[in-house]
Image 1 (cartoon, helix red, strand yellow):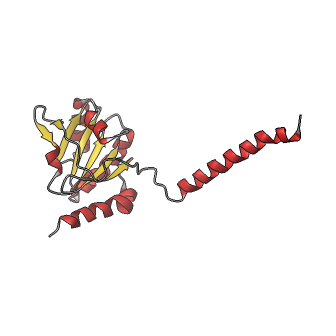
Image 2 (tube, rainbow, N blue to C red):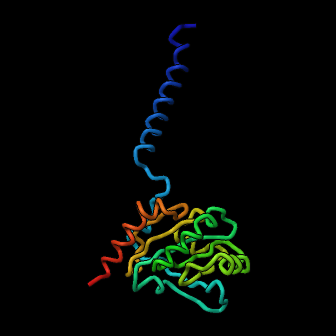
Image 3 (spheres, rainbow, N blue to C red):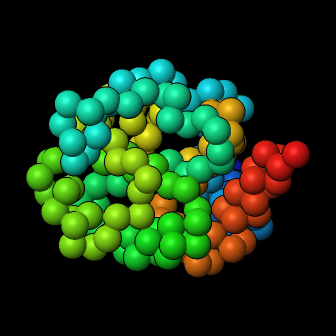
Length: 184
């Protein structure tokens, strides 16, 4: 057997190590794993009709996303990260940030109990028990938060919890820009 044949597996291994190293360096140099691209960025919130979480029989459509900038927060009681972010969302609501909640693939009674016990940061709570609106939004899971401008256009998508760090460093500047855009 030729010595060259023995080096082929070693050469292949070194090439793979090089590719993985480049990818790791690229990710650590600024790629944000909480920012998943969305085909909906720059587009209107998809059309929908959903019931209010706490008031079955009361329906909302996409018109609730017009008039002022706001956050659409996708959450569920089965989601531990949603629990971790919930207190911070309450703080944002107390500061005047408008948030609409989308209860995603959950049980209505558990979700209502959650909000009654932990506080309700949402100006409106939508119930998406089957996850169909979440699917239209391209939701991978909970939590996810969308920043929506006063015209109902999705401007940014954040995957993961909203906390002090990512609010101050990424989401708040975008939100404040959207607020500025509505000022005469």
